[in-house]
Length: 320
Image: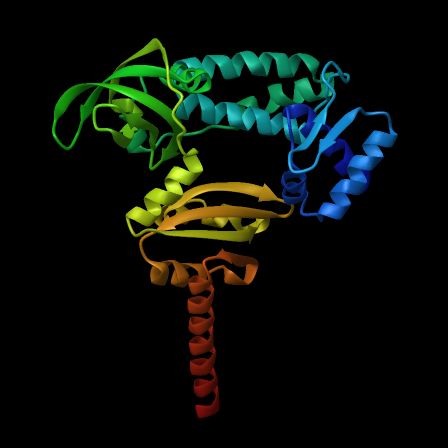
């Protein structure tokens, strides 16, 4: 990405949130903080009213508005692809809201991009696995997300698979995530006085109460990390070249895949694994195009395995 495109993308990022940290910009584009400061200064010199506060981040002065953002063809097709996933892997309300947003996006596209989307719409399809065909999220996702945003206590009727019992719970929702063909809700259960993982397809009914909670709960990411520690799971973070991510699409789930995000030409992937040994051996398959961020013990094990393999191959070569 050249500098002009990057500065424009930074401006869009600043418009997308109330406050954006310099480190977040640096990580997104794979640049140094010094470069971030220089790019922000360029925007300020162009007349963009940016407010910067040390230790907080950057924001655009309230009330300042820029013309509508235009999308590239690649961005437009990415929206269309995402629409296919939303339709198949979420619930009815989420699908309806996304389609409504897509109408607005299509409305500001140039004619060429509109025609492109119409042409390729029938060329993209998302198919459910056999397990997903049996999953019914019962149209709860948007209700849960709204209750999180407003910190409403909600009452759910839940079917617990392990006990085969229906229970009514008052909970304080924290976040949702998708794993192994199911959507999960992490919430503080007032009945159990602890955090619980609720499968959304097992929630029969959701009642949003007028009561709000002010408890300080961990973020979803922090909860997942703590859960990994409690269950003796290892948190693993790696970066892989974008060019090989398609080859890992199915295998990554067997290694405890949790999430991923783009950082320049790399994809940062987070895993929760029960076996660093098994993960190390899987990593060896594509390690020439990847890097281990953490933990250090995984780096050491991969290095040892590589050394053992190299030594064995050297001995075989010398024996001929």
